[in-house]
Figure 1 (cartoon, rainbow, N blue to C red):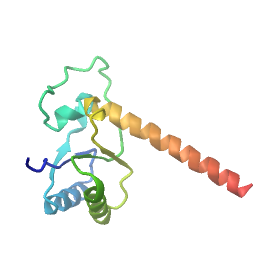
Figure 2: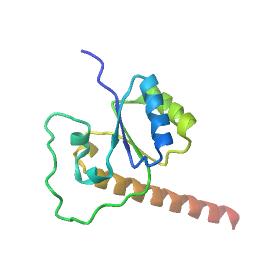
Figure 3: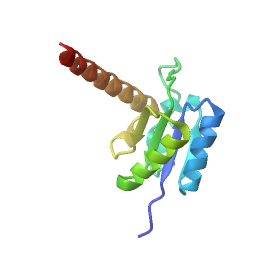
Figure 4: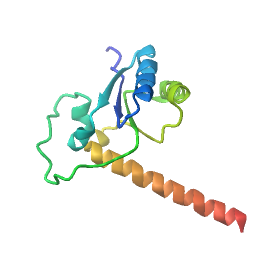
Length: 139
């Protein structure tokens, strides 16, 4: 059985220098990468990765464009120490990466919009918990 292909999807990388820096790091590590267009938010993660069994989503019923102003890094088939290595190299090259996700059997069925919204909710929840903890410590 051969090694499974590693791939990284980059979404909302509007700064061309950051995008190229990220892609250069991934290329050096032997990882395929793809910069996603802003318009692909209605597509399923599995489709965006080119996985078998996924086809393009039809025009979304909610025609209002999804606006997500944060860079998103989606990591496929990258785990454990390799994940630490990749995230460390990306962090060195481009700095802080707030929104990153590892593809799972569950979230590959989600649209890119759902993945982004879920990460945003998780970040808000964690930020609230940190804030609550800091308040308790200062009392």
